[in-house]
Length: 475
Image (cartoon, rainbow, N blue to C red; front, side, top):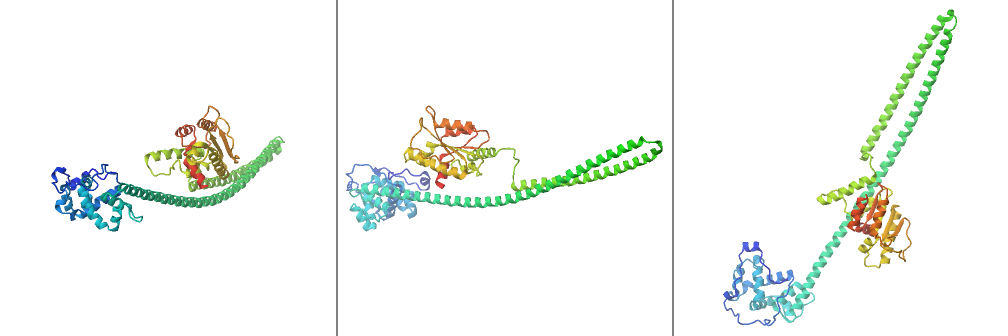
């Protein structure tokens, strides 16, 4: 950037440092041209650090110049405190250095005297390897020896290289921190999964015991019902005997009636006993069913399960929609980014998941420096590893009117398709999604927005190519 900059309005309000036209400066030896006045080139573009160092050096020597050698616009600046001189007077100092070669020579003489051996080396047109590039560029701008522009350019390149190196180091540090956090999260998830598996085994064991008790009670109920049927049959037999006894002689009528009354009394007692026994069995059965129901309610409350009136894919669809809404609103929810490999793992963990991959969209994003044959080989090999780990169905689609030779052996569980002539891979992917039954989780990997929007309308879950690339790099 040029040495001169427009002054900051806030700084002008604090201290009014105004440059005046050169006609008001007086003679001050302005008729003596500087040694480098013959250079007709415009002022060079300086890095910000170099510009600030030049202004700082000039502000430091400004109070030591005689009053008649200080330009009029800088006389008020020379009276400022040291910590404010370079900050508030920077625009006026920069303008004066660029437009007044004689003033620059006077400043340079004092700056070089303070710089010592480094100033001598810069005047000779050389820069020590161990010297600060910003300091070398600032001295070169003031002294302007032969090749001073090259020294400034070299220093600017060194400053930019240091800044780029610092940015790269910061990015590496952030990446390492994210990797550490991800590893910690995976360890916590594994511990939680082990706990849940142990709890599930315990619940299954209790459920088996309850089922065995239910079978025993059912057998007891059936035996009671059989006894009741036998009692009813006996009662019918007794009534038949009483009817046959009624047809006997009148002499036997009273005796038969007495026996019939006894039989009816016995039948009443038997019915009462049967009813009481049945009430006891019903009470036991009700108590057992109530116990089973309360155990099931407690289990559902402990596992925090909602009513299972929807498929697992419906829950994933809601989570995916919530993720999009939360991203738009900026809320810190459990939504995951479409390029997050953890999101891909979550979807592949669903039962009977189908992973559809837009082949070249992924390979050109992740392995663009390789040939197409090497890209296909690397992607298919990596997908084979995912298929072996998850057991899911995987289909990778490439553009191509004819089958391409040189494909690697297709791993188990991976299907490789090429679009037909007159058809793109995007259209083939949409046909694959439409062919799936409703409710089956279908995951489509593509960074093409049109593909993502198209498959989402048919119930699939689109994820960016970076999610698969990160998942492959982790395997």
